[in-house]
Image 1 (cartoon, rainbow, N blue to C red):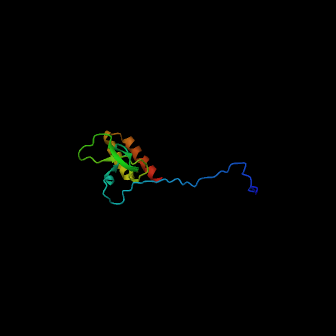
Image 2: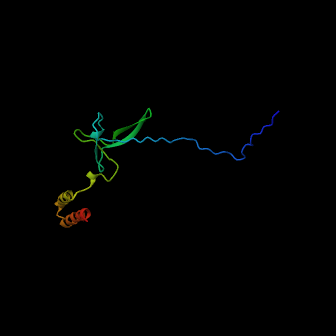
Image 3: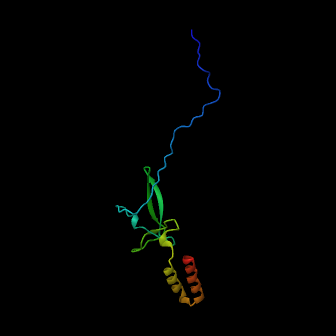
Length: 126
């Protein structure tokens, strides 16, 4: 008979890491290309939106759905808040600031309008 000459088992446990990759799928909304969906017809309004967007998962597939947060009248455009605050169309140009200042001067408060105009002039040019 032969004696077992194999080495002794290790006294400390062997630590191993399983080869598992975490797969994360990012979904994005892009209205650049024309398709059959109506999502590209919804515009941004960060001040007074009339809809909110919620994600609903159906059979492990995400869907973005619009829900009205107030009554939407006939002829009114459907809007929701895009979320970020640095969109270029949200930035007020100097021309818009001047027009807004003139509109605010209707109550004869000239000093407030002059301050408003120069504030935006300084903000955009200095």
